[in-house]
Amino acid sequence: MKELSRLLSQIPPSATLAINDKAKAMQAAGHDVIALAGGEPDFDTPAHIVAAAFTAIEAGYTHYPAPTKGITPTLEAIAEKMAKENNVHVNPKTDVIVTPGSKWALILALSAVINPGDEVLYLSPAWVSYPPMIQICGGIPIPVDLDPEDNYTVTAAKIRARLTPKSKAIMVNSPCNPTGRVLTQAEVQAIAEVAIGADLYVVTDEVYEKLRFDGRPHYSLAAEPGMAERTLTTNGLSKSYAMTGWRMGWVVGPTPAMKLAAIMHSQTVTSAATFTMKAAIAALRGPQDIIQEMCQSYQDRRDYMVQALNEIPGVHCPSIDGAFYLMPSFPNSQKNSVQLADALLEKAGIAGTPGIEFGATAENRVRFSIATAMNDLERAVERIAKIAHEL
Ligand SMILES: Cc1ncc(COP(=O)(O)O)c(C=O)c1O
Image (cartoon, rainbow, N blue to C red; front, side):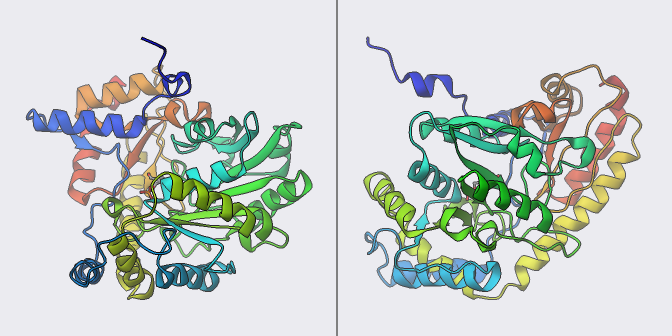
């Protein structure tokens, strides 16, 4: 038999999904596992969005959409949201594509800008899928290592240190999975300054945009002066609206790049689901207070977890500004993050994701999702307190 894909053979499957599957299999076999490895809101999708999908199906929104990149009212609702909330002004006819989840929006963005061998920088620690996505699109992933000791602060100097003549783009994620950092205006301006100076495209993943705590503002890179023509913004409803299974996201960006992204889209997945596009309008234009309630609940869980984990000897848990992940370290432990995650699963029945999956600067940490019911978080804290000295 001839060799199967060399490219895909080198790329590991998604670590977070794999660990989550393992935890679910252990649960199915009767083990009491607290699953903190995934990235899934524990809330139900708000009822008015569900109702809009049923209405759309009954009204016959069950065929291919036209245009395939999104029905006009959904393209308009996205452009309207971007203008109103992000100060990013795009033409809904030419600059927006509705995607099945923001993961596909990221692939479209990367495939529109990368040529084989181009280097794509990304801020590290980063979500597990960034390096594989860059590779799948023909690029070479280059981490810009951020330091947990200074709260993963981004500076122009740190990015510039990783530039080469092959640098083509930089991927940014704020609020960030896994660090929980929300970029400040100064950090966003620093990224913009380097991008303009080095003629880089920016792919900015804003899927956790609405999950910010303590009233922290969100700054979209595409809104910075000189950035609209080089910034591709991805976003979606999975996290903020508790709609992971609906697969609804979008990418917006400059017209020439969006033209290419639309070719990739139509030649591969064709479109997002038509009735889901109708539900997305209900989400974007409907009441937003329920989103704030969910966000407040994540903030309450953060407050509880950060305090409770820091009270356990041998556990250090920095607080977070947004998203719903904590990445405690275990300063007295000699174990690496894979061994730590294994020990937590075996000794305490807690599934977390080893930090190394997010990059070298997250080694010796384990990522826990706090999009988990409070009583499970309380049980997790009790169990960690019992076994922390064994870690
Ligand atoms: C940083 C980040 N971006 C994108 C996604 C993908 O979200 P979706 O494809 O469900 O919109 C995730 C999901 O975990 C994520 O953590």
